[in-house]
Each structure stands twice: as C-alpha cells, then as structure tokens.
Length: 172
Length: 211
Image 1 (cartoon, one colour):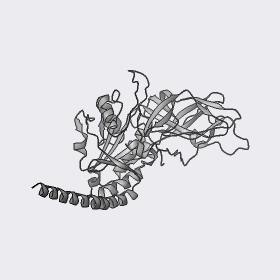
Image 2: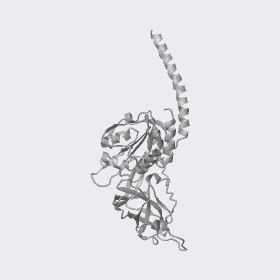
Image 3: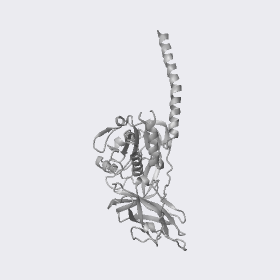
C-alpha cells in the first residue's frame, strides 16, 4: 500500500518569486497592470493593515479556474480575516484548504482565512489558496491580472499579479 | 519411485533456493544503485499496475497494462477541476518529457486518470490535457471503474457526496507514480518533488536500466 509506505507528503511551500511585490493596501490601488512591479518603495513609516507579497496565479492552460497564491502579513495588533478574493477576470471565486489523510489529498472550502498579527500566512499550491472560477478570459503565462484580497477589518488589497506556468509554480 | 520424486523435488527446491538467495541480491544491489540516483521515492513493496480498461480522451477503450508493458509509465490520479496539484504535476511532467530525445520519449507513457468522471468526459479530458501535452493519455470511465483503479494501489477512498450541481470534494492520491516496464510501481513523487528537472533526470536513469 503506497499510502502507508510513503506517507502523506510534507508539502514544500515553494513561494520563491524573484521579484517581490509587497504592496500596501494604501499604496496599491486598483490601477491594473504594473501595480505588482511598483512595490511599496522606501518608507519611514511602519506598514499598517494587511500586505500581500509574492502573489501569483497559475496559467489555466484551458481550464476554467485557477489558483491564487501569495503571502499575507497582518501588520495590525488585532487578528483579521481574509474573507474573499475577487478578480474582474473571474465570475466567481472561493477560498480553500487542502487536507491530507492516508496518502490522499482533498480540497475543502473555507469561509475565511485567519490572519494573526505579525505571522505571515502563506497561500501556496497544495495548501491554503484562493481559487478564481468561471474565468471570463484565459490569461496566459507572462500576463498579469488584477485581484482583490478582501479583509474583514483592514482595507482591501488590490494588485496586479503575474500569471505563472504551472510547471514553474514550485521552481520558478 | 516415490523416493526419486522426492529427490528431484528436493533438487528443484535447492535450485530455487539458490536462485532465491542469489538473484534478488544481485537484482537488489542493481536496483539500489538506480534508486540512489533518483529523486523519486522508492516504494518498498512495489504494487502491480492496476488491471483496468478505461476510456481515453478519444473515446477509445484503453487497456492500461497492455499499453504500458515495456514502457516507463507515469500515472497520476486527479481531476480537471483541481486548482493546482493536478495541473502542476501534469505540466511539470510535460516539461520533463519535452526535454527527452524522441526515442526516449517513445518509451514513456504518461497517464492521467480522473477520479471525477461525472464532470470529466473524454472531451473535457482531451481539452484539459491539450494545455499540457496533447500526447498524454487521459482516462475516464464510470465512478466505480476509476475508483477501482486507485483502490488496486491500496488506497481507501472516502465516501463522497457528488451532487449534480455545485461544489463537491474529490479526494485523490497526492503521489505521481512511476511504473517500470514490467508493470511494477516501484517509485513515486511526493507533491513537491515532481519538478521538471527531477522527472527528466529520473526518466533517463530509468530508461537506461535493464528491467
């Protein structure tokens, strides 16, 4: 029985985007392409609210849905919650986690993802993630699409995220 | 007469014992040498390639063991609505295969079996796989048939509700299996290990080995 012999794998969170796109909620308006590359820039002020860095989506390769990933940091002093992700590129979207048991992996919907103060929360392939569904167009590798991370308390974060080929998802 | 038969049986048993003690040792050491060089994890008790005949993306019957004999088979179970693990695994496999020489590529059989046949028709499988590599084999069937295929590998699938509309969960193995030409599942990739570089290097090693 392979499941017993090899065991549930410990998934590597392989978010290693070379170009960081740390965007403060205040700094990244919904101004579309290029926002991801601009970054927050040097600032003397401590960041506030929620920041999203290293975000990307997968090239759908003809599928009608794609995963959305990134690292969220809550710079506030109170817990917050990611309650939804949205994008003009998709008619629907949801949040999920992946559960593993006996060598099997299964995806479960989440109402929200807790963001404790100070601790980065990684959305990564095989783990917590957003999913953009019923795509209205097919973004391709190298494009960027606009996405919004909706928070329960902090201002929403909207930024343009790169589209990455699935074969590069773990080793870009 | 009886004694003679016993003697010959005894001689046969002795010969078998000699083979059993020598051959596996030699084979074992050769295998160990191969295994050391692979990124894929060894499966200590190799399992047989499932005995199934499913339907490929062209609507044709596909007898898995007959098609796989003599080749290195990469077998993955998933579903096309899977957001990341399935496309990442298959796209990484496609990229690995694109790096092989044509004569090497011919000896590799990449197979994707859906565990969500209600949504994954042959046409849907064909469209989805075309985004990765149109030469991949995509197999579907009845729910019972595809479940049987994965259960032959020792997995116990959970009872799952599958409503006609709306979201539902599809449990699937996280591993990409490697079956050697004699149809034994000897190796497998954990989720994060199935990178294009790792798969391509492993395939060259496996294709060089005299199975």
